[in-house]
Structure formats: C-alpha cells, structure tokens
Length: 263
Length: 221
Image (cartoon, rainbow over all chains, first blue to last red; front, side):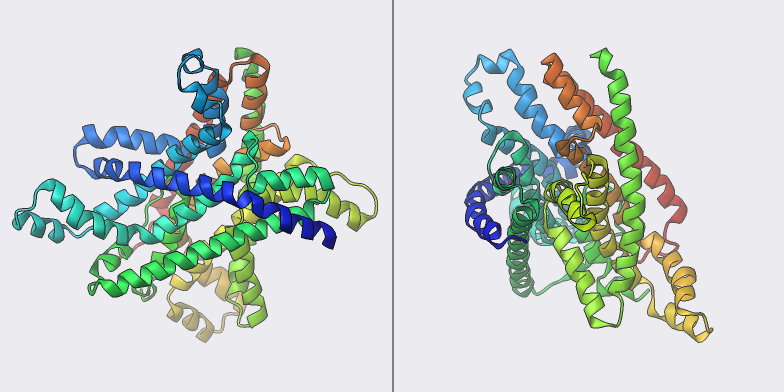
C-alpha cells in the first residue's frame, strides 16, 4: 500500500460522487414514477393490460444492463432517424444515454417490486374501500398505493442499492463517476489496489448510509401503522423464482422472519 | 453479420464456462462462509459477516477491475517476478467472490430456518458435528434456499457480461467487436440481448423444474 496514492485517491474520487449520485437518484426517481402506473397494469387481471408490461419487465430483467447500455449508447445513436432529429442532441451525450438505460432497467425492476406489493395488499382492504363508495382511482391512490409502498419497502431498498452499484457501468461509456475516475487514476498511477479499494470503500459507505436511512423510514412507518397484518401476510407467501436478483434480500428477510423459523 | 456466428458460439462457450465455474466455486465458498458464520467463536462469525457485507456493498464491476488489475500486481509481489493474470482467471475469481457473498447470506437464512430441534435430535443421537451438517442440516436447507439461489444464478449469468470489460471473449465482447468492425452496433447488441435472454429463460425454466422436485413438503400460510 502506497499512502501517497491512497491520499490522492481520497482527494480525487469524491469528485465522482456527484455524478454517481446524480445518475442513481435521477434514474431511480424517473423509474419510480413510470413504474407506478405500470405496476398497476401488471397487477391487473386483464391480460391485455398485464401482458405487454410483463414482456417489457421480462426483457429488461433478463438481459445484462451492460448490453442495454451499449444498445442505447452505440446502437440507437447510429440510427439516421435519431441522428437527424432533435433527439440527437440528447442521445449523443453519454450522460443521457446512461440515464435512459438505467431508467428503463430500474423501471422494470421497480414495476415487479411494486406489483408484488400491490398483490400482497389484503383483499378486504380493497373491498372495504369499494363498500365505502370510493372510485377505482381513489381506491388505488388512497388505499392500495400507501399499503403497497410499505409492503414493498424492503425489496425496494435492494433496488436502490442495486442501482447505485449499477451506476458504475457508466464508466464503460466514458463517464467519470466514481468508477470512471478510479479507472482513470489507475491508468495514471499504476496502483490498482490503492485506488480501487478507496473507490470500493466509497461505495460501501453509500450503501451503508442508504440501508440505514431506509431502516429508519421502515421503523417510522411500522410505528405509524398499528396493524402489522399487511407485513406478515407477505412473509407467508413462498418466494417464487424470478429474474430479479435485487428482490433477493427481501426473500431472505422473509425467510428468516420469526413466523418461518418455527416450522 | 453471419460471419460472426462462429465468434458468437465461441463467446457463448466462454460465457457458459465462466458461469458454471463461478457458480460451482461460489456455491462451495458460500456454503463454507455460511457455516463459519454460524460459528460460536465471535471473531470468525464477525469476519464472515464483514466479508458478505463488503462484497454486497461494492459494485461487481469494481471487484472485477480490482481482481484483474490488482491480481497482476499481487501475484507479481507474492512470487517475486512479473506474472500477468488473464481476464478469464480474474473474472472467474471476481464472480466467485461476488457469488459466494450473496450465496452465503442465502444459505445462512436457510440454515437458520431449519428447525433447531433437528440439530438437537441429531446431536442426541450421537452424530458428529460434520455428520450433523452433511446429513441433517444441509439436505433440509436445500429446498428453503432454492428460490433465492435461482435468482442469484440468473443474476450471475447477467454479471458474466461484465468480464468483457477486461477483455474476455464472451458473448458481450463478441458483440462489441462485431459492432465496431462492421459499424452496425444495433444488430449485434440485439443479438447479444437475445442470447442472454435465452440463457436466463432457460435457467429460469430449469430451476422451476428442479424446484418442483425439491419443493417444500409443508408450506405454511
């Protein structure tokens, strides 16, 4: 270990923090916004509504993000249709290509996370809302969605951390976020250990902070809602295999829940 | 593009080889870590917990880069002369490490889900500590761990594409080279997408089959 290079890395790499966070937060926010209507379509019993969404989430969760990123950055940019239109001013920027690829990917994952939440909302709650004369839209907005968010929160944390880690792929299309800067620094200093370990520590710090923040949010919400029925009903469902690695922790979480350990 | 068919087949072979090797090695390592994680000696279980925590908190790409560029530096320092690590060895090592970190957490959860009475009964029957693991706990944790393990394998298939960044000729790399040489990125990356989607679909279907065989006899709820 060369202390001088570690110090240099400690001074250089945080400059990539802004771009890493910008990519992560922007893609997560856009993905979340788009995935809400998609999740409701995906959870719908009408196959004409759910099948197209399923095709989309299946394709984007079944292929590597790196392929999706290159497809958009190199592939779409080659089309003369895009090159000659106003889109080119957006598509020639690696930042926007990364943003589009990450958003499409995050939307697919988040849609499935939220769909799981929607389907775990107790039927009685929906029926009660109907009995009270709420319209379909109001039921979704006031009853189903707030419950869904709470149920899906543990799985969504994994999506957030997954997206943060996935943002490192932006370095493959010349963006200088944390990973990009560290690759640049390694090529200048020839000290892979020092630089990459500092970069790793930086990501680790971010993931720990995210996990802690969501844990605070979760305890806050559990305290706010007196009934924990919605949380336990989800844990009893046997996890099914899916294309979603980011749901993994949630399934583990349920596996180790007290209700499961006493078989 | 048809000229690249051979290349794609070679790439597919490498992708599959990397996948199966890191999956097998990662499963063994992950199981070992999960068992050590249950150790009663505090330093051992704490260091295993730190290992899985670090691995799961750092991007896979960074681990691959560290293994590839750092591997050469480390090997040279240990042996005393310059030894270059190749993309394949570095990639498999990195993916094995990543896989083991996640697999260890899955296995730990599954081990904890095996009823404690089973272990106590086995010990009361006079089985040795290794017999308890091999005959009682591991067989019972397989169906519990299987669904999450499937997801992990599918994400490993996708993660193999990251090794192309350090130069392994896998499906992704072939697409990259083809896209560059024919100046037609779209068809090449679409072909790569189709190959990966086929692989993940096939593994999903085969895991469903395995799971229906090993499914839990009693599902509560």
